[in-house]
Length: 439
Image (tube, one colour):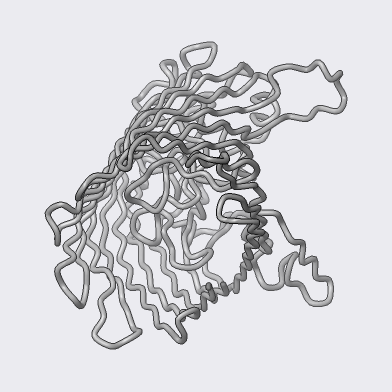
């Protein structure tokens, strides 16, 4: 996948912001993923997936991976696992480093956990319509070589139970997940609040709005995905998630929920109209009682629209890169006209969306208040309008040429965010084109 991206004001800020400035620029990004399946028989296989370009810096032409002469084309292991069935049964097991996505009918992925993790997951068919998925994952382990081996509470672990149900015209998958972050792991991860990698973003998604204490965290999530095609050509997709994380004091606590709903009309040959809505709970005006936003681990693929809230067609055509704890606290409503096609192999998608914050404005600038980042977080006084026109053309069945245009009308309140002299709200634009080769 290769993307040529012209961007302007990706930080939604007209003024320069030193090293973190994301104003107008032209960049080319490249990412290469390969998967190898080592199949012994229909019941046993090993999988190895590799990736060149796992971060924006590694994907950029002229950056570390694609620099003239001094090229460092390191190949990262994206997935490595064994997939097998217990002999004489239909019980399937997947063990190793693998992609895990909690149930999500809309948004492209789960808003709680959607990433590569090391774990064990077992699927047990109950009847034709119902199965049970049970899993354990180790998300992080703090390896402190300066202390004895007896160091405890060094890991972040999670266990989940999912019950997928498929009926005539209906699909839903209720789930429950529990995670524990040990105090040593929290101490290590909390020392860096810069969101520099997914592990550190994860621990910020388990803590309250103030400076976190260095203690263990318990977290719980529950919810369900839902999809209905019974009233074809009307298709309904929805998700409801709730989560709670607790620490040693009230200000460490975090609890909240999300809901999304989309309705497609699939009865037209030349396009699919869709109405969508998404809501996530936001902060109140106090830090002493913890956070009112839903805890989350990592959500690499969740997004609505294709610009502000992730969801871009190619690699780096979104201001925020990926959804994390800073983005939560909003409601959004929009219209998509998907797969508009009057010419063979040529398709367009048109999106218009309005989003407003559900976070209390009075927490902006409060000392020790985390997760409030201009250009990521929307307060109750902030809003954005987004308009996108995305076009794709099939050069071959395996090769797609894309051309995306995006615009964000910036409605961030100047008075709310006036604490910074280098902040001047500005609209954002993008023009992205590139190729995607997959088979």
